[in-house]
Amino acid sequence: MTELHLWLRHEVRSTERRTPLVPSDARRLVESGVTLTVEESPQRIFPVEEYEAAGCRIAPAGSWVSAPSTAVVLGLKELPEEPAELTHRHIYFGHAYKGQPGAEALLGRFAAGGGTLLDLEYLVDDNGRRLAAFGFWAGYLGAALAVLQHRGRLVTPLTPSSKDELDEALRPDTGDEEFTALVIGALGRSGRGARVAFGTAGVEAMPWDLDETRELDRPALLAHDVLVNAVLATTPIPPFLRDQDLDDPARRLRTLCDVTVDVGSPLNVLPVYDRTTDWTEPVRRLRKEPPLDLIAIDNLPSLLPRESSTDFSSALLLQLLEFETGGPWGRCRDRFHQACRELGVVEGEFRNV
Ligand SMILES: NC(=O)c1ccc[n+]([C@@H]2O[C@H](COP(=O)([O-])OP(=O)(O)OC[C@H]3O[C@@H](n4cnc5c(N)ncnc54)[C@H](O)[C@@H]3O)[C@@H](O)[C@H]2O)c1
Image (cartoon, rainbow, N blue to C red; front, top):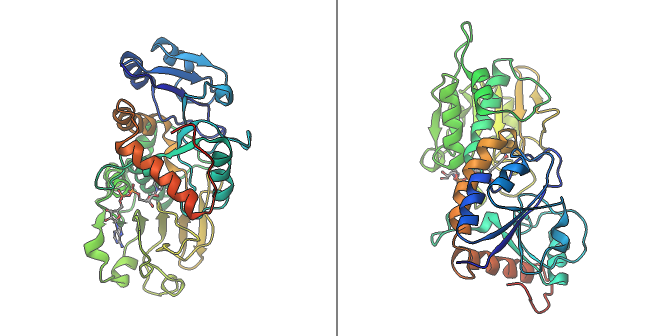
């Protein structure tokens, strides 16, 4: 019997329909003895009634601020600007350990309140492998949008849909021209998702991973019609594409989808654009003649909220069932303290560890 009290919060971003915990997994937690409070949230893809039926307590949106101090607040994306002091343990994607804008201010709020960030990006096993991630669906969506754009069938603005609807649009029509596709980072989560989506679209993508890019063959890269980049670069490497490559008269490449979107980072392998695209304007033309279109959206899995939430939740559930101070959660906590030290954020005496 565990004493864990989890508090699933409403997401402040109105387009965020995903949740880290779906009702069927909430039921598993409740059955294992976890106290689970779920905030009402109008846009969440799963209605709050399903959580209630699973034995969860229901609370108003945003009420985590006055949750018992021992509650662990669970979410996905950014916290609201207030309160200035964060007193709880928070599980979510903080995006604060790689020098992102606002990182110091966020960690400062935790330090001021005595709370702790347990960042989902750093929830890893003994070998450093991520235990819960959205990568597969990011890649799936990235390739799907690239195919739809390439075939002239992308409907904008983009809106969340179901996989059935997306697959229906993806399947080839009679009269569709054949094209070639390349996925880089093909052996990773996003890369696998991209290859599956290409398969649904009737295209067998060429898979490149570390072995194929060690000695990069740019002419071979440029000879594909569509490219999906899904690498996770950890050290700076020579870029896959440079401005001059886009002007290469032999370029066949017409559609480029960057799932990685490391724009602005020293790790960026596609320094041929300077800002992301979004749901309203998902495509930017990088070259007119011959055309080259870019898709670089940083919240792709939110476009398939049900499927991506369900997968993520099933992985996270296993970790929540073993929520303890050591193991993966202990590493998360250590990483938080390390980030505070690196940024010179002075922590007080922690109440919530
Ligand atoms: N756009 C979005 O909405 C979104 C969502 C989730 C993840 N992502 C990003 O997608 C990227 C991939 O995530 P993932 O979960 O698939 O990572 P992953 O670790 O599962 O896979 C990354 C793959 O890239 C390969 N790789 C690394 N360096 C390479 C190189 N130089 N050449 C070729 N292959 C290389 C690795 O071998 C691995 O197979 C990350 O940067 C992640 O932040 C984006």
